[in-house]
Amino acid sequence: MPIDIPSLVPSKYLNHLLQIDSTLKNAGFECYLVGGSVRDLVMGKIPKEYDLTTNAEPKQVKRLFRTVIDTGIEHGTVTVVLDKVNYEITTYRIDKDYTDGRRPDHVEFGTTLSEDLKRRDFTMNALAFDLKTGLLVDEHFGLKDIEQKIIRTIGNPIKRFTEDGLRPIRALRFASTLDFEIEPETKKAIHETKHITKKISLERFQDEVLKSLLGFKPSRMIELLAEESIFQIFLPNLPTKISPRKEILEKLDRTTKELTGLQLAFAFYALLGEITSKDLEIILRTLKFSGQNTKDCILFFEILSKWEKNKKQNGIDLSVLKKEYLAPVKRHFQTRFPVDTKFIQKLNSIFESNITVLVEIWEENPPLLLSDLKLNGNHLAESFPDLPKTSYGTILTQLLDLVLHSPKENEYSRLLHHSAQFISKMVN
Image 1 (cartoon, one colour):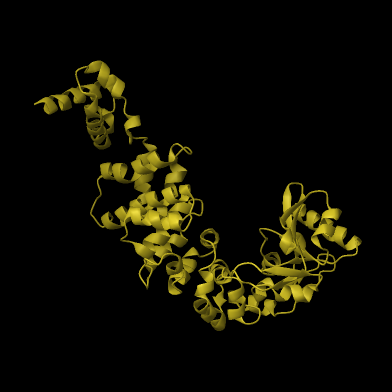
Image 2 (cartoon, rainbow, N blue to C red):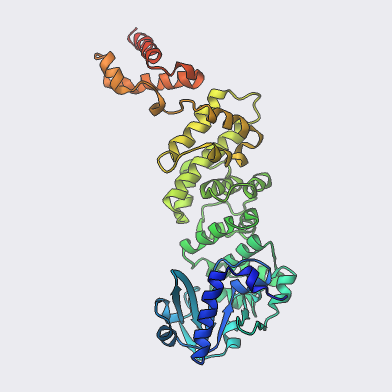
């Protein structure tokens, strides 16, 4: 598999990589592009980031470059910054003893590239590429596994997963994002090392979930997490066995990747469709999802739940579409960015063929919220000075319900007239 560097690496990054490579080699050191970036290049993909490895120790790397950040210097990693772009450079090392199930207790520098590649997680990630000579180093048959679309650990999978409890989750994520299959012994080891996986931080777990949502088939990650009962490791109150609804997961794969909260809503609705919003909030907060993703997910979960229950009804009333679906979306997002037609169209994975109706309604710019009314509490105070302020909310809510059914009533004089009628009924 020849690597076509010029067509796959944008010139800006390629120039940076060649600069790093030549600087290290001119100083007498080795340098290789390594890991996921090489895997992506072999697969004909443009890498998202570029990591390098060298026999130079961190202090030696720091002397060669102007801007260097100590990102993980105790484990041999520093970050070289060129034109505000970060490049991680890690010294060849051997990892010694993992007692916390996440990081080696200590590392040894001064080893060879071969020793360094042995410590990596999967064969497909144990590739190294010499940018100057074009030599591809593959000592663990990573190319063969990439060709056969197989995820396999280097060496004994139980040993590798016992070293780092995040590796099983990464295996599931790679299976989802790359559309690979997990080799049987590797998959078996995921189940047998759950006590180690339990040690990883919740932040790292949810980060893997979020990365999977950006991939080719996010539904695969959710299926695998359910199949291996991984959620229950962190959420022991969940049912022992969860069977995701496939028809909902199919919609997840069609959902825009621009709305993480919507993707999460589909994922959790497929897994636990009948839970309450409060229970969902507890789950999301337990898994350390951000406050924004949590709020967005709950909104879309409620909308999705409601729609799935109501969509089979014949001819849903337009006022219901406004009140139950468009209004909550506008209320939730309007303070963050303008909600426009393009945004409404992004909800097509929920509403499917009915999205055209919602777009048509939206483009008419109907009043949806109390703030859209042409009459407000100040107007009520001016026109009905004897009306208790505690009644304002009731009157305005009635007016909003009225204009949801009949938008043309949203004129000051008409709303004032209707207010008088509502107040009269309240008095009588």
